[in-house]
Image 1 (spheres, protein in one colour):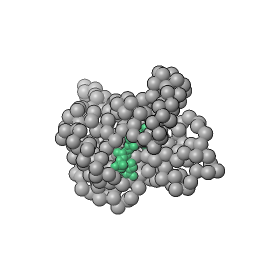
Image 2 (tube, rainbow, N blue to C red; image 1 turned 120 degrees about the vertical axis):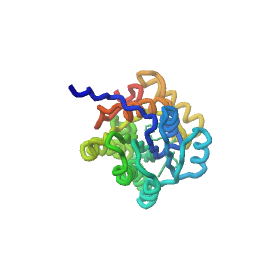
Image 3 (tube, protein in one colour; image 1 turned 90 degrees about the horizontal axis):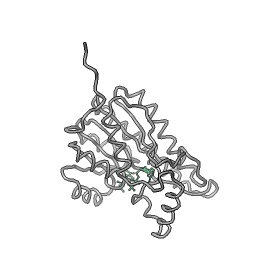
Image 4 (cartoon, rainbow, N blue to C red; image 1 turned 60 degrees about the vertical axis):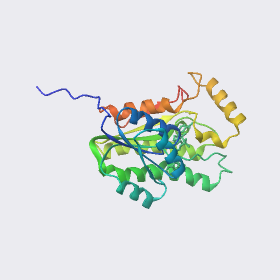
Length: 244
Ligand SMILES: NC(=O)c1ccc[n+]([C@@H]2O[C@H](COP(=O)([O-])OP(=O)(O)OC[C@H]3O[C@@H](n4cnc5c(N)ncnc54)[C@H](OP(=O)(O)O)[C@@H]3O)[C@@H](O)[C@H]2O)c1
């Protein structure tokens, strides 16, 4: 009788690449993966943020990459050997009425969230082991309707569709999408402190679990998806029930 396959695949000794791992959600994923014994490579644009991240998380390596620049993505992955898991986090938001939102903001959201995730998979995909996986990070705006977020919604919904399609195309490599609700990260630093606090408070009150998320809330689900060999094509909402 053949052995029953195990759904749990340990991260210890695996190679995990986290693009956008120098802040917020990605940094929490990098920290948790490293703590689980993975060899973690963190990529992002800013050398300063990468150096700071390397000081905070023992044993990781880092590399500069801009997911909106195909040559940069190609060079980043060319410099790496094989890997087991890829997590892709970068994503700009375009906020504003459809009549006013700047096309630069629209292009930035689509470029980072859709093109950037696709390019990351294009250059990482063939290096990922058959038992490995990919997690793409999306946001709740693609799955719940908010005014003034139409371009951001399109980009986030696009990631959901892309992930499900890639799960079929790249099998047996697994591909999953994690959709975050409002998470307390430096992404919101563009708001003045008072406005940010008000936004978090209002969001907490309208969220079933009565709080906004922390980066670790999302990282916890990402690590589950990296480990569970029977999950692919999933779109997992980590939002405290905010999209209900
Ligand atoms: N925070 C939330 O409320 C929330 C909710 C749902 C979904 N999300 C999504 O989750 C993802 C991560 O968000 P976060 O809150 O963790 O943001 P964050 O704290 O601002 O971190 C973003 C990370 O991505 C990197 N990055 C940005 N643009 C990049 C590019 N073009 N190429 C390579 N790396 C790039 C940043 O580093 P560099 O600046 O050094 O490049 C940083 O490491 C985003 O897609 C965001 O839309 C966030």
